[in-house]
Amino acid sequence: MDLAEIKIQLAHAIRMLVRAELLDMNGHLSYRIPGTDELLINSRKASRATLTADNIVRIDLDGELREGEGEPPSEFHIHTSVYRARPDVASVLHHHPHWQTVLGIARQPMQPVFSIGSFVSPELPVYETSSLVNTREIGDELATCLGEHSVATIRHHGAIVVGEGIQEVFARAIFVEENAKKQYYASLLGPIQPLEGENLERTRETNWKPIIAAKIWNYYAAQGE
Image (tube, rainbow, N blue to C red; front, side, top):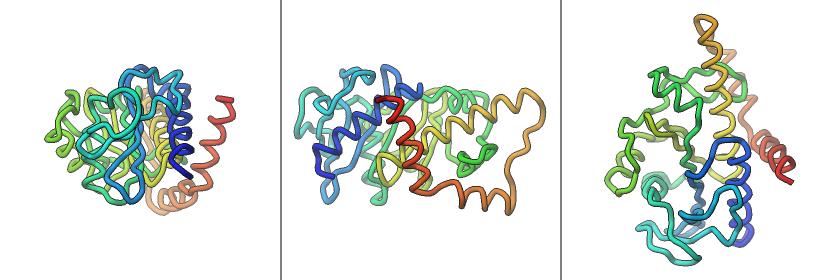
């Protein structure tokens, strides 16, 4: 895709995340422009609910505006710090997912309890600084906490999800939140029975593939249309 198409895909993803109740008036999704130290991200003041490609701005890893109208989000450091630390990452989402945040507040490690969320584990990192990630220092700390994982909870605040592309990050965010919701409700009924052993490994292997990420993307895209 060229940059114009990527901006459209970013705008679609953000509006779909709003529809899925994973974004509201806050949150941001970015894409690293291949072969550069620059990224595309939704502008700070634009409504996520009505976002268009015109509301996508281009910034460098210092947060300096390179193209577009408006300023980047104040927490752009989440994105730039992850991109500096993780050459394998091409897209970063910061959002405030309800159920994942609830588990974090209750200090309940996420368990793999649902097939499409089976890639989660109690080892997923939790960052304890709940303030805005609005300095490079805090951004770098968060990126270090994330490590090589694809998901991290920011206690009392929200979460980040990273991946190799926009569709992958979108699907992963959907899957993590659905898993967290089922874990919460199951915990009300008694002790949780997570997926374990060979069953867990096979479930992870068969449920996390590009074709499945594309399927969840197409489902929400069709709803949006």
